Figure 1 (cartoon, one colour):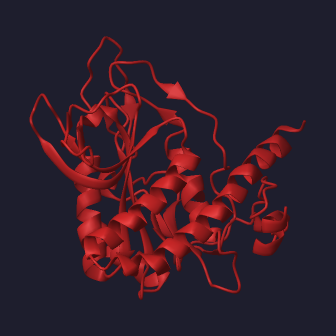
Figure 2 (cartoon, rainbow, N blue to C red):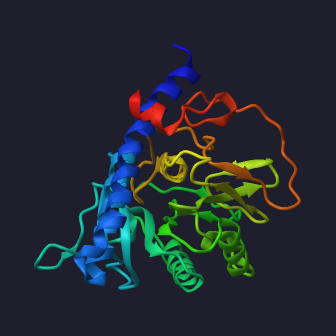
Length: 312
């Protein structure tokens, strides 16, 4: 089978699974207020997204409300809504009720901050949270050493933790969210910037690399935010979630627990899959390259409608 077609068929399987999760996320969002307590409402929504991440990244352990704590230095990197952890690294502390664990940064690959409604205040808090955890040193326990070149050109002995933000709703437009993130990023190194921001009813933000005239999974100096806008009735309801799934899938394609040999996993969705309405950063011209992907949500090769995907 042609490699591109094989990649496309594998992506279709994941995308169709996402359709079910989109329905679930929307249902949980609408029904969770019946739980009354704000903490329970938030937990229900976080657990719904956890199921999505587990479906996209089955090789890893997805922890809910996990604390990241370096046992050696005793540095604490806060509690995080969803933590993508390596199954080879056990948590070192668990609450008696089993609902919260403490895990060392060396066992963490990615983090997602989850918000019910993304306001400017909540966005700023989440960005600060993301920046702090991405600075966590993943110390090595073992003999294998890695020389990893980060997006800003520095060399690290580990692959840094990747962190992003997901929200169910926002009254802010995706353009406004992009502006707020851009303003926040001024004076901060790319290592602090979020890998992505996804809003279920607005779309997905990622980074456009000016040197390559395209998107890369993590930010580099000078990068600008690229928008994949979701407009209900015009774009598939799967679009924001598919974009985030594609992004996560690519972020952990190569994974590494410090002190062990790096690993590589097969991606399930091509990074850059065409979902939503693309909006290039201001001042950037469209490179007009043909998309090589054949998956259902790729606009270049004909988009299957949401209903068509459900019937497939």
